[in-house]
Image (cartoon, rainbow, N blue to C red; front, side, top):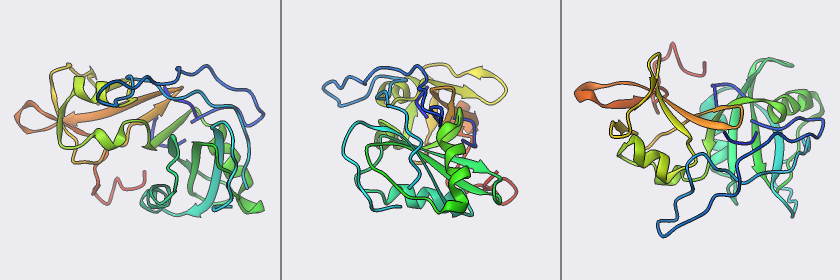
Length: 213
């Protein structure tokens, strides 16, 4: 799980090999991470309980607590202190359909024995849905595509089925941005809205038919 999400599952190989990742983000006067950058982790297939700690370098950790919905997983992630550098959700099917989580963090977490496969799947995933990432707290209100890229580690903003969005196009974020994690990059998928603006493909209140899919 290293940026550079599709809804579903970051990261590095559970066996221990890391994928190439962007370098540590540089912070300027506005404290904004460089677009597309996230600290490079070490690889770790650690899957052990919330509340335990592990000092050291940030690494990929897979966690599975059997969350039934994305909203439940999101809430768990948002309550973590300190917040992870990167947190992605992953839809897994073993041993039953649920949402597993991958984290780029220096902490350790525990997973019940029956859920370790799901946790390892999340940690090794090349695709995911990012909940926490550098700059997420700065993506509030209407922003241009260029501002989104400057303020966060999102590498690209795409229009569903139409390719990259123009830099000056305004995105109504709704204060809820969940980019996709794809092979080490964070990509925000949007759809057209009124007035020539864009909105994120995933909203805070999705329609029932699309929720958690």
